[in-house]
Image (tube, rainbow, N blue to C red):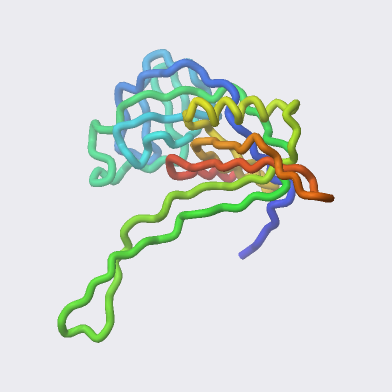
Length: 215
């Protein structure tokens, strides 16, 4: 049992991607094994995955056990054929080839992820029952010290304008890494409060489940 502080965490945004690589097969295994002819990927490469499996589609994963025409999606368990129908996971991947740190973050606040329920009751019941349904959409709000000359500014403005998701990496002080895929929006007008640091408000709206690795 342990707890930790987020102090020292580093948040980065994908700045460049490689070309799309076709995945012609994806196994129902733990971890799932992708077939991709002469893919050129190596262990540890970070990928944006597009897949026919909705639980995998648009997630950010890492390459493991890479060989010439195949590789593992590290940590992704696709052995449940009810959730991941055989043959349905094919699609494409593309490598995140460079990251840019989002510096000067003053505050971060997460929102969403709350479990929703369907309530019902039988005639003979004296109180309602609940069944879990879906969870609300998740996002991370960032307050960032205003400086348009820093490298992340142009990247975040471009992401805001083209409305395409970007990979996000959060490196925790423990060495653990969280990967997200998110739409990025930023308010280019800084706050103007007397005697307070001017800040920009940015939102990272997640499009898929996060992926977490111990290191």
